[in-house]
Image (cartoon, rainbow, N blue to C red; front, top):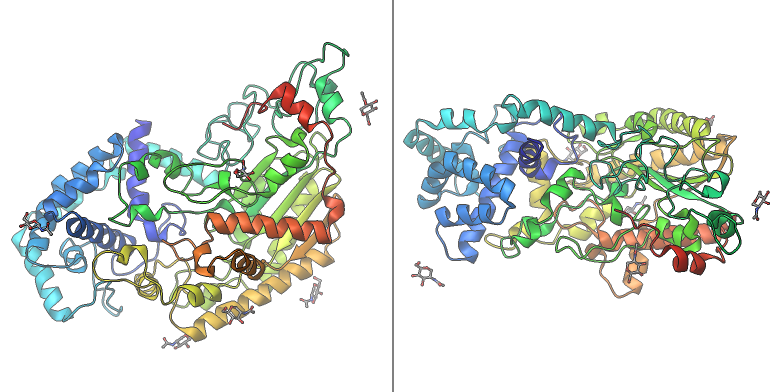
Length: 571
Ligand SMILES: *[C@@H]1O[C@H](CO)[C@@H](O)[C@H](O)[C@H]1NC(C)=O
Ligand SMILES: *[C@@H]1O[C@H](CO)[C@@H](O)[C@H](O)[C@H]1NC(C)=O
Ligand SMILES: *[C@@H]1O[C@H](CO)[C@@H](O)[C@H](O)[C@H]1NC(C)=O
Ligand SMILES: *[C@@H]1O[C@H](CO)[C@@H](O)[C@H](O)[C@H]1NC(C)=O
Ligand SMILES: *[C@@H]1O[C@H](CO)[C@@H](O)[C@H](O)[C@H]1NC(C)=O
Ligand SMILES: *[C@@H]1O[C@H](CO)[C@@H](O)[C@H](O)[C@H]1NC(C)=O
């Protein structure tokens, strides 16, 4: 049943690919079919591309697409193909493009008073509308078919969708028996996001806790160091960790900090294979985020076909300095988070001011306060006054949970004007087969459907991009101002502008081209190379500006490796 629900959700997610930044399953105020339309058009575009790449019929290409998916999902894919296949195939045979077929399927519409949204250039919108109508008329049972494909509305599955939706919205581990906000499963806000709980039956045991009695029996802080050294009779934790300055890391952030990444192989017919979908469930249960590889809390290198590049992170550096910090990381970042929603999300952070060791907190909301999908996008941006209040609320809250000796680093918003500057003349992965599709075409298509993650920056309107950047600069100034005027009791604080410039310069110095740092599918987030570089730049900044925040090297690291090997690993 759980698998079924995940299949259901995954369909929804796959189906809402481009607008994933919009909150999960929330009502989206779209027009012209919105997400359903974009999904239909992109999926049928992929079918079209497969037919070209493999010289096969549309019918074969549809089956081919399903065949790439893991077994659980194949069933849903086949069900959908059984319902819709005849119409889709008929459309392709008649030479209709995906825009036309999706209008025929009524998943796209031309709402009155709205612009007409198309990915494929149209010779005649009137002829296209005519063809869509004809397609519908040849399949009068269509509306019946369409009423059957809403899997998430089936009783039973609907309930489980709701449970999972709650887990996604609470930002705490779905499986957490002792309610200490640390879990044992990797996904669903588990150990990919926060160090693994080494005892899910005791709320006194979790990463970041202070050791108790030298952890001579129980590993209270889950760093894998416990028990007695039989030659000295001393607890190992006392011998190896007593003199060190423990420091955990947490990030309060958005999809950039969570490391949103939609594999481009899923949209590129030439790269589709069963291998690229092998970890589909894992990827979806992590909300299409990869916190385990992120700049702040990355702790793994993976060799999956969905990701290229290595992991370097602030956490990995704190661990390298002192292995006693093992597993002390928390990624409290949520796709779509902005300063206002963070005043709620922040409560998912787990730290006790007395029982736990100090924490380095990165507060980094780089875009959503100016990004939204509304046509009157500027009216929906956070104001300076709201930003000031939101940041203050979060900083005050941190004073109630952080142990004395903690540090907080706030960042400004990114300059999203870069995105257009870097990508406007490049071809989107979706347009690598068939008619080329540029980033501005994709941006404008999403804006047209009112499902763009960021109308202000993902637009070919230069005036609008400038206005959006201007507001971002004002909001960054507000964050900086609050950071420097608030007087924290438990921690010290500093601010830096989001260092995208430095990251780009560093990448160029290494021989790269700046566009290579951007996620190819969404054209909006930084990718794995970007994350590793952001961590390099942040770490250098700390070394230069806040050297006193960086704990000294633990001379016992080699001893810890000798006695405790990988300290229990991460999963
Ligand atoms: C594509 O398939 C058709 C019929 O199946 C065949 O006649 C044609 O030669 C093929 N084209 C290529 C380039 O393989
Ligand atoms: C560990 O540190 C505590 C507090 O600094 C000190 O009282 C204790 O003697 C130390 N123990 C060892 C074995 O160094
Ligand atoms: C990933 O691999 C690279 C190269 O081997 C290494 O430098 C880096 O520390 C690794 N990162 C983690 C988090 O293990
Ligand atoms: C933002 O980036 C754009 C494009 O690279 C640049 O022209 C502009 O000067 C930048 N603005 C700020 C405030 O950094
Ligand atoms: C570009 O955006 C600005 C600011 O929102 C708006 O006033 C202007 O009409 C837009 N231009 C076009 C061509 O849409
Ligand atoms: C900075 O914050 C203080 C206190 O909240 C406020 O009085 C002042 O106007 C702010 N300055 C700027 C430049 O925003």
